[in-house]
Image 1 (tube, rainbow, N blue to C red):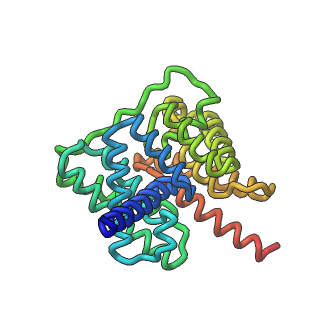
Image 2 (image 1 turned 120 degrees about the vertical axis):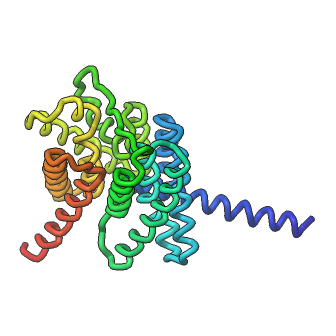
Image 3 (image 1 turned 90 degrees about the horizontal axis):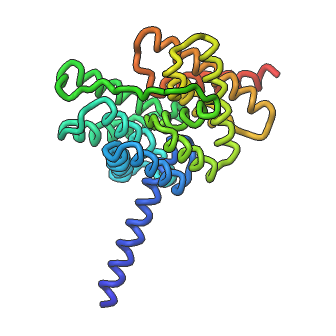
Length: 295
């Protein structure tokens, strides 16, 4: 009995530990190393779409398992750094593809590939954020368009009946994980606030500011209303969130750059995903480091 209890306890501990890493991985989508945040993110995804929620969980488990099997740095794995790009791949696959067996295969392979690419950049100390997710998802969509057109679907954007400046930022939070409903956006905001209040407030401000500027450029008002010109700004603002005044300046620079890239990609009909965020945040980090040498 003692041996059995010991084995059971050991299994419980390992399972709990793995679950915490998985939830942290989901939380890292918005740069939060917090299992509670990740759990609320997952809850919000399930609220918007059960299939997307299942894909997010399945993909994060696959990505985390890949990191463990390949013996990646334990500290990095424990922080969830090999889960967030994988999670986004899972949700994105179910946004662009029908929920058939082949799509689930793409989820598993895509999540593992995103993890391997993430490790490549982490080893070289390059802050590429969600770039592995972007590259893998673009590849999957390309393959589907050329070889598996029968499983490809064109997502139908939600229609916003009114323009509400108050909801721009929250909708931006929701669109970070491809959720086009206000409830998910509010839940994501609360999830980040629990982990880091200043990050949540920065993200909200970034999303609202980006939407207001987008309106001035006469961009499609429906796309603005549902957060499509805010979510990259939300992520950019979170990256630079801090109590110092300079942090606000760099966040502003990053938000403006992300909006410019989003507009440019929309003009050429390129699926942006989080690439505007990646490019804007990376460029701003370089500018920030250069400024230290110039001042």
